[in-house]
Length: 86
Image (cartoon, rainbow, N blue to C red; front, side, top):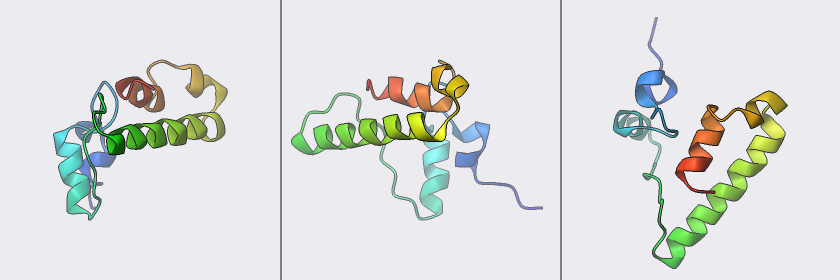
């Protein structure tokens, strides 16, 4: 039985939210083009990227998660929103 990629398992996830280096490497090997988070946007492009991410994730939080998950501070979606300072 084949193992799932690291980005889908706990070993590829950052405990504070998002993916760690191993998870990003695993996703890249599958053809995904991931960038590390942009916590303090300096350029106009980075500001747009952050705004886009925050809007997209807030939409996912409200539509694709249960009320319990949306309020849970330890859920993956809330951790990633905190990491990006949304």
